[in-house]
Image (cartoon, rainbow, N blue to C red):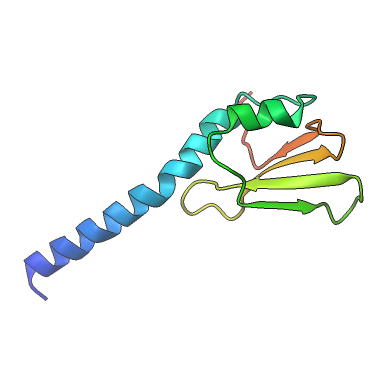
Length: 98
């Protein structure tokens, strides 16, 4: 394979990775502003992207799980869990630095 073809393939792969990562990074940045006890309408005003999935929690009939895209190569979505009363009770897949 010629150097030009290898360079072109590397460029295309690099562009694909950078495009897919932007929503995850944006979601991570905005998730830092979400706090437990917030109302879900506040959460939706902070989050710029819509959830990729909204479903009832399998462990409770009264909880909903909203999933947002995470960074490239992550194994799971960012999740915001709240009761049907529309308050945030848990934020999953966020690393915390102490």
